[in-house]
Image (cartoon, rainbow over all chains, first blue to last red; front, top):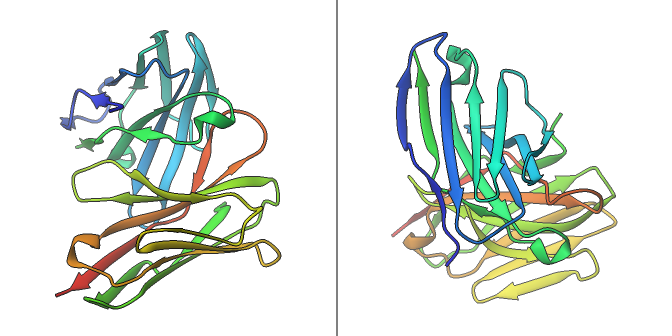
Length: 114
Length: 113
């Protein structure tokens, strides 16, 4: 089974703190994604990466950055956390190309910024 | 700008009934339409998916109906069971670029026993 692991399930951070959300996948997938899930808004793409050290902005990249130094690991960084970044963050991965239709999600990281 | 619009936001169905969730999209370049199911405390998991060259796909009690001309697709859950209670997301993917999915707003489905 594909496993996408988000190491931190629940975090409480203060406004202005730097926050790291870590994600590891064990299926050698090229593609990795960070989504944000909010009630009534569905899942919105923050950043994605299709190879090591490669990244592209999604629909809501403002206030976030990412790092992919190794193929299996994709980190989301909040440089200076703000209360409007309180949300659930979902990491996902997939194979490239049309054979990679299935995107596999982790269980989510609940972030509260106070 | 929501490229995929999903309705209703919440739905309550009696056990044994049919649950229907609808989605509409605007981008004609979308070529793949999956549905994801999410239980509380879990990440979304792929439930069923369809390509626009077919009008219907059925897997067990779950059916996707696809209307390319209307740019709409829907999920039907036959003989709905309490274990189907979850949040459902429709999504769409374009033909270009990486495997990015655009998601609908989600529907919280409750099946009453």
